[in-house]
Length: 274
Ligand code: AMP
Ligand code: MN
Ligand code: MN
Ligand code: MN
Image (cartoon, rainbow, N blue to C red; front, top):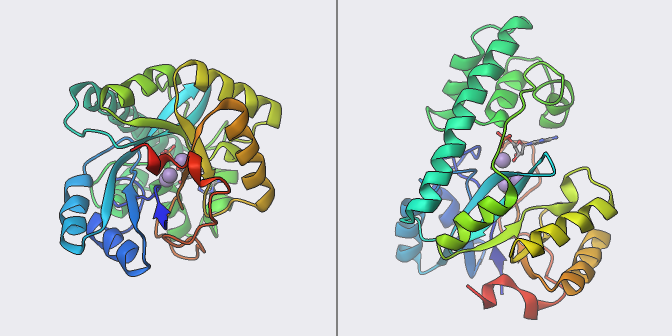
């Protein structure tokens, strides 16, 4: 089974259209593909249309920002009904938070001497929902930083210019939105939150207690050690496993759609339960 269940289109911070993503997924031989834009399902109808045309199995997905212990985490919803009012109300709430945050980021960048930050970021987003990575791309384009990594070190987080705190909903609420929409809720990239292993274990425990379904064991940047630790934690907490590249289509990135290590234990793969 070749599956890639974590991808972004230009409806959030990816570069390509849903149609282009589906074509690539099909070309590289994926059996299963999911579009998981940040806090938006707007790209899914187009992805479905193209998937039907090519005979590729599409899983409706979304990547929702949430809080756990006052830190931001990302929760992937898979197999969701996009017509669920409860889910869409939740996503609208997050979209509004993003809008307000983008304005604050822009004001902060303006104060640190960057001209027309909102307009320039909007141009990059093509008028779609603004994310921090649009501001990041703008800062690279304008020559303030050389790549994504250095932008997020110097801007857009903590007390740096453009660092704005957002009050996302708590993770248990977000799990409920996904479950009301008939989907499965999984923690995205658990090893990317700059948490110690014991903190990650606490997160998994709390996520389990809130009826979460699993976590992403494999993504494009997973090390062998992370995959084997992830596999152990799956067993410990009786979770399901997902696998996704987190492809955005940005230049100078090695991430490719469908280019993922195998899940060590396929019996816990989320696609057996969707
Ligand atoms: P947002 O959801 O608008 O807060 O933006 C978060 C997104 O920024 C993540 O999904 C990543 O795509 C990206 N991001 C955050 N930190 C970094 C980083 N250090 N390097 C590259 N991308 C990052
Ligand atoms: Mn992103
Ligand atoms: Mn994420
Ligand atoms: Mn993502």
